Image (cartoon, rainbow, N blue to C red; front, side, top):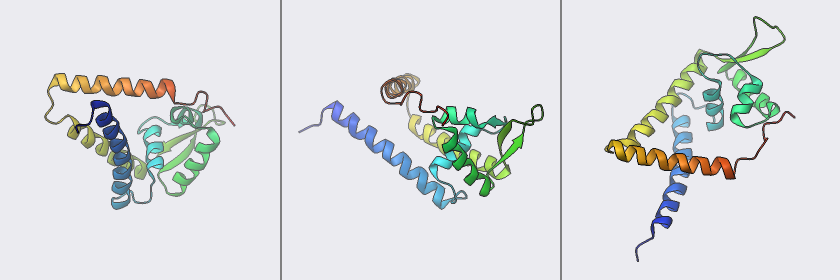
Length: 156
């Protein structure tokens, strides 16, 4: 008996989510970034390449507390992917920046995502690309509106 479209979509979404996490972790462990977890790479991605950022900004973007982020940043500092720098205008403010090694990790991860997107849209028409983008946007909105915990990044 043929599966209905909802069953197929559910299986595809669950499998895709699980596979992305597994593949991303496997790619990290087998590549140049074998000392990083997926969470650490996403922290590096959130810090960004060029603009020093405060802990509060980064924690807010990640949806975690500053205390939780402090632990992650301490580990990334030990691994030499990140460093803390005092703000030149206000020495009380500490900003986080990527090191050369951190920027390499950022670029490797960015390429992983670029390859994933390119493989996804390869062979699709422009109309199909738009339908896919609209469907994923709707799914993203659903999760944000229904499952993301409100105010989860309040200071501890």
